Length: 535
Image 1: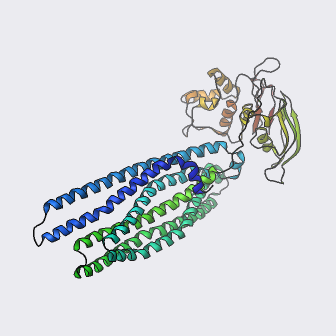
Image 2: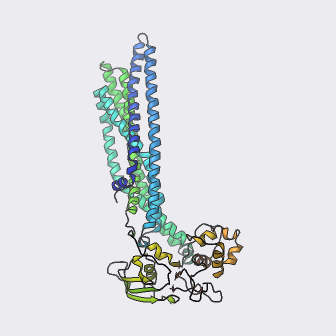
Image 3: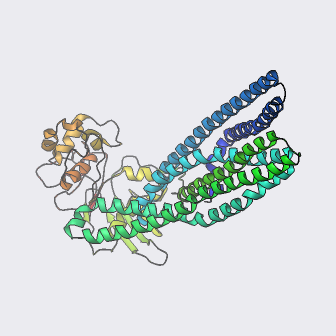
């Protein structure tokens, strides 16, 4: 998705307030431009008074008008700044919300093929860049362009020769500025990409620091980070250098314009073609003319960063989502019979991992899926959970094809404990309940007793109300037991936590054929009336 297309799609509601802000910025700049003409009148009145009597009444009248002009300019500029700050931050907030929604709607395949740090960088670094750059640049750019055009009009209206002198003196600087902007754009885009690479690598090394230490990979990790950091530094330096020399260049052009106006103006005064007040006004006009050029270069520099960041954000928002589901079948009184019927699947076209796979797991059975690495064990479970869709064949639960069910309904039937258990920074109770409704304290305690975790929880400072943050040290096994406990209630869940590293268990919402509950502490597993897949 392109930047312009993305702005139209996500920023259309802010067009009206943006237009109001632009009008305020233009009006404020116009009032600022009118000011020098009044100063010219005051200067001429005072100059005439040196050889006679100064008309103080007329001078004070002009002073009052001048004060009113500058006050109006200040109020309009403040209003423009307030509106711009509001719409840019709301726009950024909207994008952040859209990205969060997008993450929840993306297929698992996206996360399997994209770097986690790069995705997080779009939510943090890129969005912050968008908000700050737009807030600082849009209003400034409008004001600067208005000042620039208005100054040109007023200069040529006041005196054509001096106006031509001022414009030609800064024309070269403006051309050089455009050239620098065109050269530096790619460095700003590379800067955002390299920043994402560094962020992703740091997160990866930090998360796997135990592995890095165990295999003595510290030196190599430092070298790799140094290389990535150097590439980031190079792109940042080039972008900032090219944008940084614009300001000194514009200062030089501005001073050169002062000199040229002073020289040419002095010659015209000696010839009696203009008054001293005209020179005073032109000195201000030159400042108003060169200042916008400097501001325009700064605004374009900032907008380049915003453009690069927005492109990354809009590219992410343009990723293909999981297809929207229509009315689907539901399961009532689930028994727990699972069937794979001639299932075929491949992550890439022409490269099938699973071919003609058929299997039936009846309610109450315990099924282990074994095989070498890459044989499709995890893929089988991903297909069962509808993280991926099959290329051919069907997967059925109690005779109902899971493609005819909503993904949310399919996943409600399963408990899944991975090798890398994820614990949220919340209380033990909330981690155990996690998105389950009407769970009582008795059910929670029964689940933790079933996995022999209740004693450990009772030793925590606040028991089940202890917040699991960095101050609470949990072993990998304890985290896995907690995640196993998430799916357990007083009805039916099943997991072999004694021998299996990974688990995908079918959760039956009932009791077994004898009417017993699911917890049996005499065995090394929790009994269930539905199948479990250990792999």
